[in-house]
Amino acid sequence: MAAMSAGIIERYAAHLPVTAATPRVTLGEGSTPLVRSSRIGPSVGLEQLYFKYEGLNPSGSFKDRGMAVATAKALEAGAQTLLCASTGNTSASASAYAACCGLRAVVVVPAGGVATGKLAQALAYGATVVTVKSSFDAALKLVRQLADQPGVALVNSVNPFRIEGQKTGAFEIVEQLGRAPAQLFIPVGNGGNITAYWRGFGELVMTAGGSAPRMHGAQAEGAAPLVRGRPVTRPRTVASAIRIGNPASWAGAVAARDESGGTIEAVSDAEIMAAHRRLAREEGLLVEPASAAGVALLLRKAKARQVTDEGTVVCVLTGHGLKDPQALTRGLRIPRPVAPTLATLRRAIG
Ligand code: F0G
View 1 (cartoon, rainbow, N blue to C red):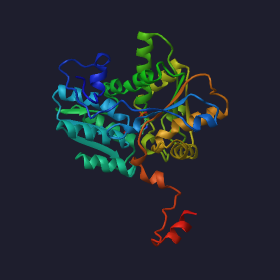
View 2: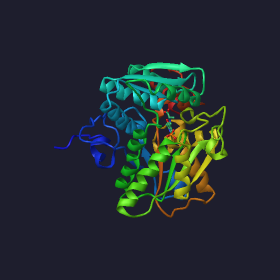
View 3: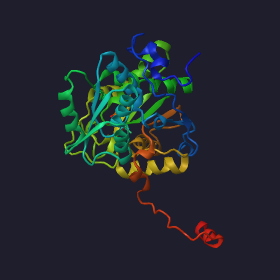
View 4: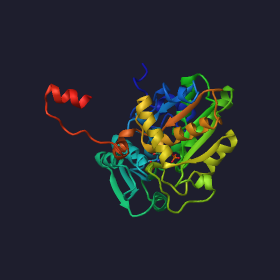
């Protein structure tokens, strides 16, 4: 009998660098819903807009796909420690997978640069958390120098098994739609995920025929090295997950853009927060700010008639909204308590 919620290694073993000896590490990652847009799509003339809701992975982000494979390969190689630098989600994911496999997790994050929910996750899963007075880029440079220690597996997306696991997001979209979409919108930070999706679509198209989507990557205006063509020393954006100035997968991201005939563009924090709010209020989809960047880019392109209703469009929603409660409550007023009488209740409801 098939496992109830087989993870991505079990489901896609034939397409992954695993053997019968590779442990089937899983927390039930993958199999996330592809939700048809009910209001945002129609409002800009797109009847076939879908959201791949990756926030529903076990630790609340797409990182779990790659982390399942990276952890399995680390176990297979005899590692005892998972090590990463992170803007938050990679650290939460590594901590969760280390916990389920009896490994140690050491996560290095930029001080003050990680959303509260993510930091809370890493601590709760029992990781050793180090906050450094630096950017993510400097933290990644540091941990890369520790990666050759015996028993240590570096699980940032410079680890090729991470990219391999994350390409299964593309496989699922093709299964769910019955074909590849015409266009894909995805936020870009370190560049690993857009690289992974492009590989996933490429492998399917090569084996099954058909065409791959145009890949549209969204960076935040204050952290847009790929758009500017050079690293950004002090990246700034409300979307802390993609506050990255020198992406490790620079070449992979650019190749995804160029080979697919797509774009990588910058969106402002105001556009990101507007898309973030619309996803919650018009779709019932709670995401963290970085995850709204792709939707912000789509909205701009749809308004400019650069994207029209000629095929299916998918936006990848990379992380859950509850990870960043500050972003959710920005500009909102928490209602004051009222007396428990019918009259005051009626007044409060309005
Ligand atoms: N969206 C979210 C929610 C993320 O956490 C990240 C990256 C991205 C998008 C961008 O993906 O880096 O593959 O281009 N977060 C990393 C981390 C850097 O440490 O959690 P990317």
